[in-house]
Length: 286
Image (cartoon, rainbow, N blue to C red; front, side):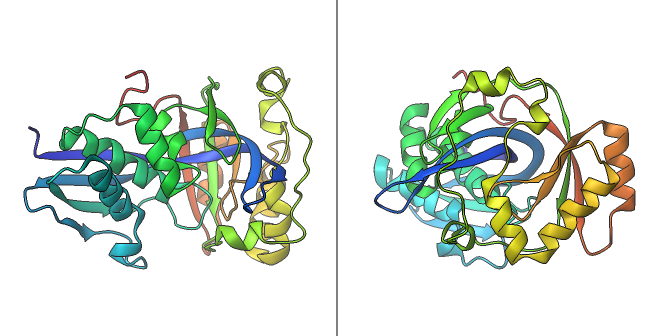
């Protein structure tokens, strides 16, 4: 049995995000296209025989017991009744509270990695089912490829996207998802679209919108400023927020993206990422 494993946990952007309704239990129904990008957290997993789940290092602002990587490990351990444990080392490169899915991706990579490391033998469908217990975005990262998503984000249809360079601004604001979804100003009745509507769009970058963005720019001036800055610097790029924020992105050519990165105001962080069609740590077809 392999005793150690190193896995990547890629970020995602939402090419659009429409809120189409709300379930009786309070969860919001949505439609979105998730795209993987090559901005990744790094996770090292070591198998132990003592049955303990230990986080060696991780996000300093998150207690170990509250960390999704620990919760994912404990959930898999409980589900499979394995007697094995692990040590988890997490290096964060994806900003937190940025709408880039870092925590969900970390959880997905731990579920997949430990399933391999522990030899617990769950198939992808079962792992995705477990992932949904941890967060609505986790099943997408376990699917391992770009997807059109519906429901609360768990109804996934794989989709191919053109190769793209993504310029991302993180305005160094951590937006709790609940702040956006509890707002009375959030659109909750966006008309539904189809995959064909998206694929057939003459300009994918301008398709749809992010319904969370209206609320975020009202509550967080830094998000509004980032959108305005990017709109001025790249007027035809249709910048928008990813997820429930706070990151703002645009699809640009690589040269333009690199030039904008050099011009970025000091109070923000910037990233030039490439879109991915497959998860970098495992084969989605398996």
